[in-house]
Image (cartoon, rainbow, N blue to C red):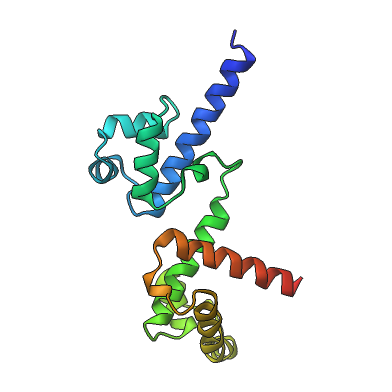
Length: 169
């Protein structure tokens, strides 16, 4: 019979493993082999971490977090927040494309692959709003968007998304 303390430890390990896997997927390292090469950890060790069968040392987790562009605390957040992370990552890629001169509808289509997401009128409204969005992002980042790392860009998008929801709300 599993004690309450052991069960809690197992649940924490499983959550940590899921978060480690999610971070790797978001960093484009969703397979154990490339993740192991990027982190310097054996692929079998990565697999055990992701499945919650083992827990990394403090040093290994700190190194893993740095490679994935996440703060160590992110790996211990309650819940998975996959939707927020996925949306923020997509928004970062869309904004990156817009900063390179694409309109929002073009950037959205490029990032999501959704060809018919917006009708003509919506595309026109989004295209018209591209400059306003980019101005707001430049204001938020003091014009240094391109100098930010992935984690910092994601944090900006989460803040702006929260602000938009609050204003809409």
